[in-house]
Image (cartoon, one colour):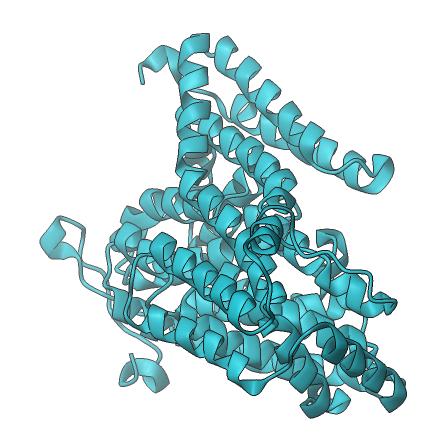
Length: 479
């Protein structure tokens, strides 16, 4: 990029300000969703790019590059839609719902939701797959027990992104240390400092919130009605739970994501044929348009009538716009300009941690992408950490805190849109209840200003000035 194309900070911020204003109006006043705000952000970014000297062909290329980064995720969204359809038709999700209604107590339901989804997500290394399988089943169980859908969705998402943050199988967990110049397992161990307290506090909060609803949870009669309805629609058998176990085995073998998901779809289709007696036409239809039923029981109909490739099209449209916007802001240097401006004002370790998290949120706000939210701040702040003698695993922990988990607090992020589509709850309804997403970034900021768990490292061999490596005495031996 030549000097004539360097954006000033006001130009760089303008598209993000316009996006945020349009989003606020669209969500809170017009009730029109995020298509127009994202399109408005792209138009504003293009105008700024043209004013800065870029040619339209260059701007189109930036948009295309942004969308290209999302193509693997888009393909996975299609496959997830097919998984939901086949796992409902096969009776797998109904079986989980059936036994869950009989086992889970209302008094511990919400923390159990977060914990169960967290264990599954840790094993799978995929928040999307966890949301679409066990998460969907837990939503149905919650509805049967009388819990508000937004609260259950918040607990499901908290658990799903525990695994996305910590599992060595997760793509974001692998990207963050590479971008920050540290190793994977040092990164994972360092994240225990924010993850364990945040998830523990989240479980306590879900337990407290759950107590307010457990006393008025649905009566046994309503639960029995749902269980009997499921029993009439499907052949319920504990052997169907073998499919989730096979899914865990597939992940254990560390096969590539797309072939693994295709195999999971095939398992669901096979179970539908052999166990439920479905035919090929029915299987193809649920893979395409989702499961459809009129059982006469509203709860069953509202939670099982979903899935299919076509159900993912609105979400994919928003993903294309969001990633296209991220591409143009990245290509014109707007992101780089904003982050560098923030980085140049850092005066302490606390302000460095805060700036890293704020910059990651800002990229997420404008792009909706996990990957871009992790990659750009990690690349920009890496030398800042080394200059201050701070181990770059502090940086990787911060970008994961905001870019992997905190991004769920942005209503138009890819993760929030996907969760909304799968769980059937609007982002603005469930965001206040994703306690884990609020706590992880907040804990990192507190750690930064109180110098807790901030690891030091000498990077003088890389040409950075040697810094004092004194630490909190209590933490010295631990770190």
